[in-house]
Image 1 (cartoon, one colour):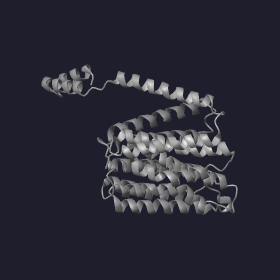
Image 2 (cartoon, rainbow, N blue to C red):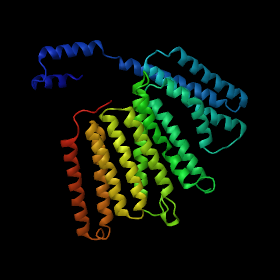
Image 3 (cartoon, rainbow, N blue to C red):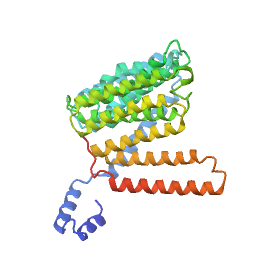
Image 4 (cartoon, helix red, strand yellow):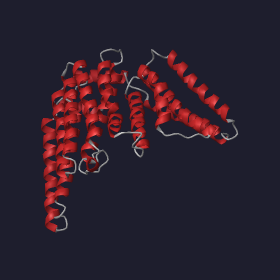
Length: 376
């Protein structure tokens, strides 16, 4: 707490002098030796880099099976440490889980290097998920483990689709939509688990990460609907309804699960948002090929995000959604004024419209953003 801020609060009448003194005393008694921790961190980093350098310098001289054995022994050691530290501080648990997960992921690459094997990316990622999901989902405590686990899940799904898109017989359009949208179901599962565990914070973060994925997938789907032969759409060859329908079904099932699991404003907001995304996704298929409708549907999605944020008091999400809508309107103004951009008058008008949109977005964000951000 800075001294200048305390003085400004006293002068503004927010707190009195005695309260300021109590704050100073409390801050002094709870101050952390940041300089000492920084020195320790630098020393640990230097030691770690030195060990890595020594191993790297002699890497080729070590037999492959021996390297794998050492790698596995390190993983076992970290796992044992995690078991012994199960009731330790959450930060240590989170760091240990992340390190063990990273070691496990690199172990698959190490096997490929030693035995000169290769495989599609989704196969080692899928194997890692199968083996390490219990670890991350049981010991995870916060953002890091939630993000790592869900990123691996989404990467596995997207990699599988990417590897098999050139093989229509192996992957139908409907299966493609199901595969891309499958990670969205985690939003509902995480919401349900928040009532069933002593680690609600971890499941809240996993729910938030997976919800971001759902909104990104819906946004990309609506953006690509501007082209009748886009990433998710190929209406000219009857290709598009399958993925759209499958993804919408996943979103609706997830919304129903959340509606049952979370009987509060936050749960209702997420369920309503996913339902809206499912409907807009189907409309994207109906109007595929129209750039104007694609923009309208995209903006409608983010209006729904803003409305859910107001309902559930997600201040930062509301401000971000207003910024996204403003940015899309600005891009749309350039798209619609493409014929005018070659003239000076067209550039002036587009620039003025951009300023107006930015000003309106700022006013809306400042005036209507919720006061507090809900975490329930």
